[in-house]
Image (cartoon, rainbow, N blue to C red):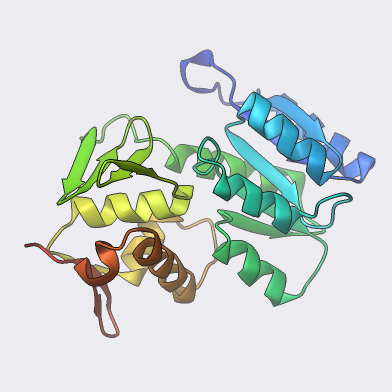
Length: 236
């Protein structure tokens, strides 16, 4: 087991209605030093997420009371939870579920049956990417016209008002703000935001860019599409 940073355990909310799977995941995650919150249905999961503010949510799609997609929508709509990484679990092989989940802001997608070790590895990878690496010269604040980003607090404000972004939208925006005037290829964005562990398509980047343009009107024209390459934040 690799000791967690600063010896402070990261908290994982595991939402799974099948007791055996829930306990299996809990067993492997506890072995790796994570603190666990468990829920067997969507309503309980939301209640615990709002109360406990976990570092990551491991969320099954097929759940009683409120399914995983409903829970994901609620998390992304909650200002206090919107930036929380979410990994979706599902027994369905339907690509539609995967696409919908990613469009709603899921950070990763793992189909059942799965290896618990792979789940742990995916969680660790996402948690690593959710915080700056120790050697990075990461600015604590970024600004673009009336748009301000507080990297440390994970907050974005536009014209003085707070804007709720998913963790992926936040990281894409951070990459664009840090590279204003330069073209970022879709592959570069995928590498910066999703890393190499997750298999997602270029289309996923396009969906998140569209969401940013919708949530932040300033970006509707400021983010330029570079045909067959990627995106660029116009440098005025």
